Image 1 (cartoon, rainbow, N blue to C red):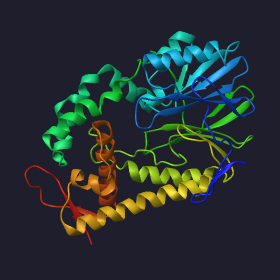
Image 2: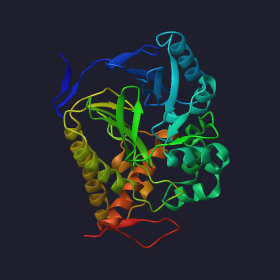
Image 3: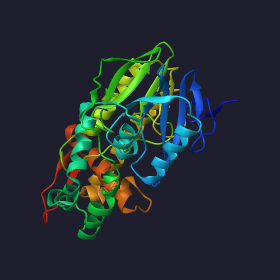
Image 4: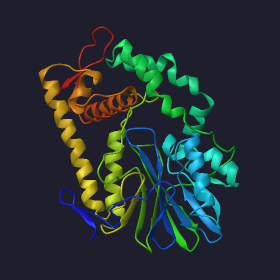
Amino acid sequence: MPAKTKKSELVYPVEEPPAPGAVIEMAPGILWARIPLPFRLDHINVYLIDDGAGWAVLDTGIGNEATRALWEAMAGGVLAGRAFTRLIVTHHHPDHIGLAGWLCERFGLPLLTSETSYLLCQNVSLSPGALDAKPYRDFYLRHGLDAGSTQRVATQGHAYLKMVSGLPPTFERLVAGDTLRIGGRSFDVLTGNGHAPEQVMLYCAADNLFLAADQVLAKITPNISVWAVNPKGDPLGRYIRSLAEIKQRIPVDALVLPGHQLPFRGLHARTDELIAHHEKRCLLIADACREAPRSAAELVPVLFTRQLDPHQMSFAFSETLAHVNYMLGRGELAWAETEGGVERVVAAT
């Protein structure tokens, strides 16, 4: 019997993930593999899609020796006898694109991704030192992080962004509205925002399969962050719009193949739950800002009560600021008078 969560009414066709180096067939010609990550979120799902002459690969894992060794083991083990045909990358985060350069060179693959994903990854790969530069540090300081925390986040917290093997010099662009033929299947190309700009998702209407990347996950909420390069951006507003579009576009009973955790059915219930989760967080921020003006750093423990390491703090801080910017845009918060160079917000009503 498939496992079922009472809260979300999600149904899991498979109760346990594949072990590293193994695969599970989720539909005819659709294989699911799992690659370990050295973070609190300790894995990424990758998929292999029957492409006629071989397997099209969806996402990569990070660029380290352990991940390269696992791909070599799969190519010579469970996937032996059929070549890889092309690499599709959903978005620019290192756990999804980190090994793209190596995989493309090692197996002679073309890279397919969105233009935004390609350029954002290239920016980090070509200028890794920029992550530690003064504008990034000032961003954290301006929103209330102390000097010590800023130092740790700007160095240790950003280190994962550099876990990439570079990219090939050319790529094939995927754009929302495209139709992508993979073997005998046609996939509609969708893109979503919030978690990552122009994140690629694929939907096969004939088989009711939705490769959702990180836009919709079964039990955790994807990180939605404001970063220093776009400090007044509204990724949370874009994410909520994207969830509404997904619910309208993808049928309720689609099999969702996500970038992390277990594949599931129950997409509409999960999109509703994700929207409610963020609205609840906005209420927590509003309550705190009625008591006193708060910086983004002072609001982090309102949303994240556990102890955070530098890697986690960089995400927690930037996600908190995403909620602040979203609420400023909706008129629920207003800027207070700046004190000591730190920007704070108050509840507007």
